Image 1: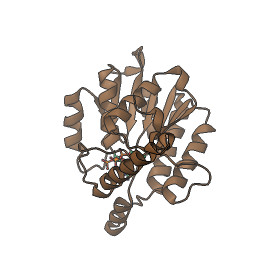
Image 2: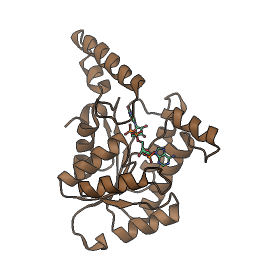
Image 3: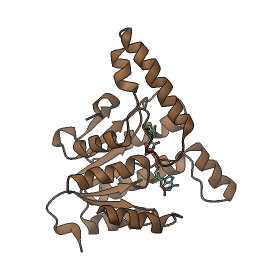
Image 4: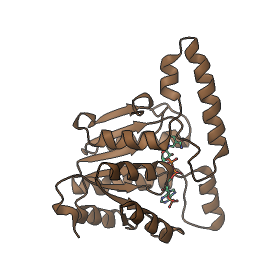
Length: 242
Ligand SMILES: NC(=O)c1ccc[n+]([C@@H]2O[C@H](COP(=O)([O-])OP(=O)(O)OC[C@H]3O[C@@H](n4cnc5c(N)ncnc54)[C@H](OP(=O)(O)O)[C@@H]3O)[C@@H](O)[C@H]2O)c1
């Protein structure tokens, strides 16, 4: 069935298998929005994810990471909202390098694939591109992780596509499938320190850098994507909590 005839929004989610991506798919379905969960064709868990998403009521798309292929697919499906929620980790990049696979570092994935998707979305004239950036991103931010995000943000803002850029702090919770003890400890310690800071007047600091769960963030992203007033806005962490 082609979704081009559907009158409501049609969402396509890159990074759907991730912690935030799964929550965004659920939030879309809660609002009865047609949701395409992208599962990369080379995913070792492709069959698992297909079953999982179909059971939840989502559509599954496994278009390869190729600009022309993505452009054709987004156009055929009549996609109106594109969510760019993918990202690698240093550990994943190292594993890919050791296995002799294609580069999977911040440059190749967080920048390269996201910008490929942006160009496809621009060619199709989608009505909103929602980009999951990070707290702390800016021109003078240090480190490859924040710098590639800054470059994506700039390219998105110059693309002519209506965008919403979200800059969350830690995204974590006991429901994260992949074990990330350092992230969890980091969030607990930072939330604790921020709690102390707020007692001494650091309320704004706490609001900005306090951690959030994927469920809360996913609902906020979908709400923003459907809000005409959130077009062409950068939304900081404190406004991503319901
Ligand atoms: N976690 C945080 O505290 C935090 C805070 C601020 C911003 N962010 C950013 O927000 C985004 C989502 O975070 P998350 O924690 O939800 O991520 P996550 O759970 O690690 O999920 C990452 C997603 O990216 C996909 N991906 C990773 N490497 C890929 C590759 N080489 N090719 C294609 N797809 C690839 C994964 O697909 P597969 O399942 O197929 O591998 C998965 O869908 C990331 O960009 C992250 O950097 C995270």
